Length: 126
Image 1 (cartoon, rainbow, N blue to C red):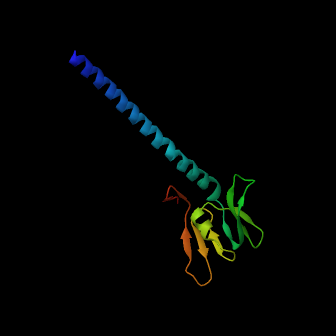
Image 2: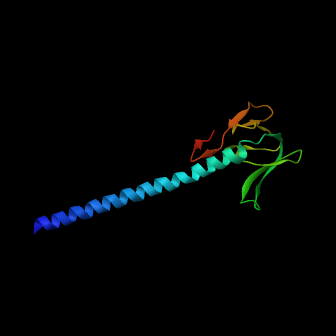
Image 3: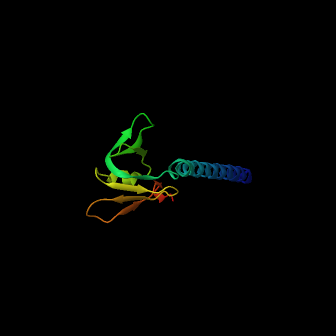
């Protein structure tokens, strides 16, 4: 009788461990999908853009999925995917992003240029 209970307990434990393993796998898989999609859209839409200008102001575009955007003195408006850079921007800053690259260069009078890349979960996307 004790053998049957022990056997049933072992079967239940194995089922429980497989279920937990499956749930952990699903959580890891879906948590990485967001970065994959973000990276893919950056490479498709942002990477081909050339962005050069002097910042007039930055804003959150509520009509475009609450996207952070920048407006240059010349009137051009661009989406900003380097969110860390977006937080640091001030009017009068010069911003450079060459087509074919995701590297943003921030130039501010009296300071060394700073380089920024878009990030997802703290990892730079290049």
